[in-house]
Picture 1 (cartoon, rainbow, N blue to C red):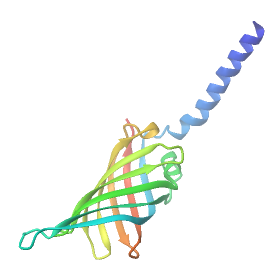
Picture 2: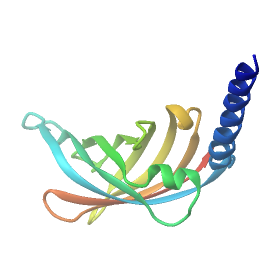
Picture 3: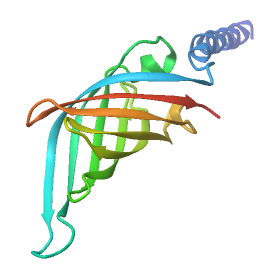
Picture 4: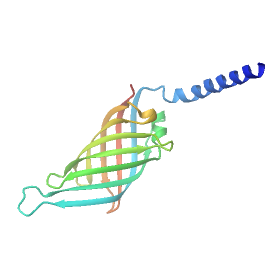
Length: 168
């Protein structure tokens, strides 16, 4: 019986220790994230409209890379540092605008989801980003911010992104 009590005490102490380490990391309920990403063009498809159609066409594509937090030392910054980053986009060739979905996957396989709305610029595109939630510690997260996407070469791009976030 004494052994059983010791085992329970050790289990409780371990749980308290684990919570003491894990909870302070997410004790922050809101904050500011700023990151810099490197993305490679993985897929791109142009769909041209028939001759004479008033719209020029549409295009879709996918980019993949890594995001690095750019300042700050909060839990969200650390979790997203070097996270796998996928951008899937749809655009209107006539207006040089569109939308995209962004997925960030951390080393621990938690995912953060976002949507962006963009307009073309002389170097790429820029627009707004809206956080839509996620898995694990990102469940219920909301936020909004902006991004500036630059085409560095035919294959390589960078994305400066920042947002304000809030947990429920």
